[in-house]
Image 1 (cartoon, rainbow, N blue to C red):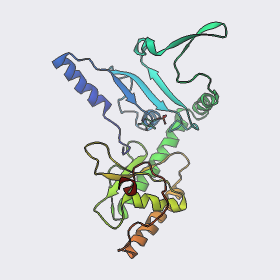
Image 2 (cartoon, rainbow, N blue to C red; image 1 turned 180 degrees about the vertical axis):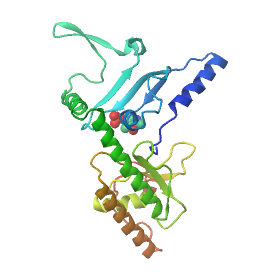
Image 3 (tube, protein in one colour; image 1 turned 60 degrees about the horizontal axis):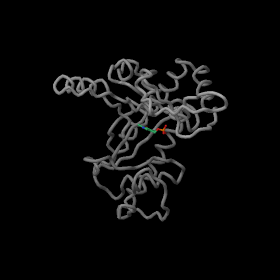
Image 4 (tube, helix red, strand yellow; image 1 turned 30 degrees about the vertical axis):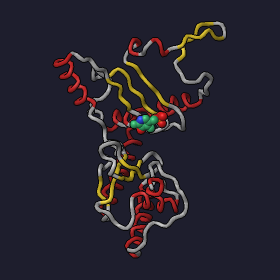
Length: 256
Ligand SMILES: *Cc1c(COP(=O)(O)O)cnc(C)c1O
């Protein structure tokens, strides 16, 4: 929700205590969609993967910080027996028995080649440099967003190169309005509410990926300042855009 890692090791330790007290042996699947190709390079000391015995499977999206075009994702099991047999179909195909674990059958192999190419071409050093550059820019941007005035950071890019922020106090615009205004120069900064038990928290989130340069960060900050100046100069103005716009979250209009 805000680019922070979930504390996999601490969760595992809590599950160890549950096992000791109640005998419930609960395995862990780690949804490492983004973090799985960030943490190993720039936070190698974070313990979250198969080093934790309870972790039985991990997924990671190649098309996020794996640096491959959509859509490729990976899932890895600790050992063969952790993938339930009943999920694997054995099909008699083209003259042999072939095990398949997929939602559809014929798929292009191009994304797998692209992932392989990037791993070989960039190596660990290359991935580390790219992810570190993303993080440097995310942390710079977060610090500058905090300085704009009305916003409060909920995270600062120190886990994933991702951060979320909210309005310090109610004003003449919402994060949904602001998100929509940013689209006037093509910025897609989604606004959304947090999940259950924090539903009244409405935030915007910025994800910094390879290609989002420091120059672009400054352009975005300039546009944010331009819109804040507009709202400051029009204290009576409420949001007037007629376009439905795009957001990952539910806009105030839609809620009504
Ligand atoms: C993006 C994301 C997913 C979905 O992954 P896809 O590879 O895009 O299908 C799942 N979980 C988290 C935490 C994500 O960020």
